[in-house]
Length: 250
Ligand code: SF4
Picture 1 (cartoon, helix red, strand yellow):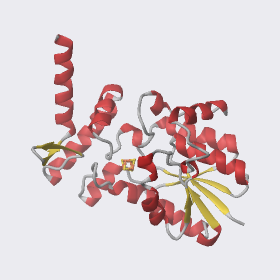
Picture 2 (spheres, rainbow, N blue to C red):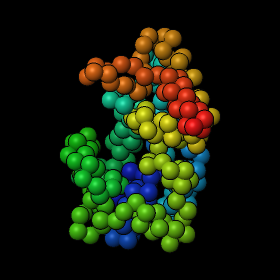
Picture 3 (spheres, rainbow, N blue to C red):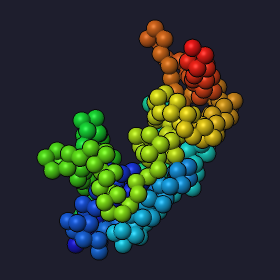
């Protein structure tokens, strides 16, 4: 009998997928598999527990044990908006290890909750390739049946009595790594600085520590006349604070 394994990221898409899998196949052979990167927003775990209680499916938590920052130190490489080894080492490898031990590829299906946007649909071939030999399904990307907006997905969770993750109400697009994902762009990092300044400060300090060892590396890049330059978080903060001070003095 087929085993149904939802890659539960803690995002609203993974909740929606969990619901649909439960409705279609029941929960007896369902797994909610989640990788702990050790820097998630605490409310992600509340949301994951609420989902687990709703479906009566225990969470299966896997972890490398390191935070992204610890991993970057070990690898002597600062993850950034172009290359993020943390995804591989803290999420993919622990999940695949669990799958190898518990989920026969012939008898298992993996479900991913990416949302139904053109940009996300373009990621499907690469995600499916990464998961080989397991077969992957993307239930929210059935463009005819499930073309729901994020707001509709959040409302759906509320209608089941599950409060959506706090990070969305803070204005974040994704609920991952507590608003300090190294793949996020300048706009999200400025937003983190505005609404979660302590987390920004922690990330800034981590980046500075890595820069003292690795040289002029940075999570973000800026482009001037077609040439890319490092843009450390400390510099992004300084510019943002200056811009805000200028705006309020007008
Ligand atoms: S969410 Fe971002 S920071 Fe966290 S593991 Fe993935 S790429 Fe790395």
